[in-house]
Length: 116
Image (cartoon, rainbow, N blue to C red; front, top):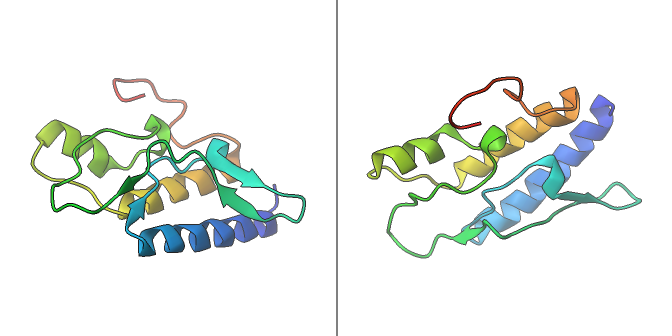
């Protein structure tokens, strides 16, 4: 995949996330497998099974998403049970997705451990 294509895909994903975040919705599972691309190169987000509307003041403490794309604060929230996470977790996952597009695999996929 060329840098130009990745740049275009990233722009589309950011627009979709801006809309979701404007509605106070976290996707929580941004990754290559959850992106749909049409013949014109337009990217759409798919699989909203992990999505959550931020309608309550309660902190987000649940561990949702796919480990290689999961923001560190999601793991911390699950372990600490007192500090939640917010919309920024989707931006972390987007960064991991960009690496996935560049390298053909998610970051840290060659590591082993509890979270992987």
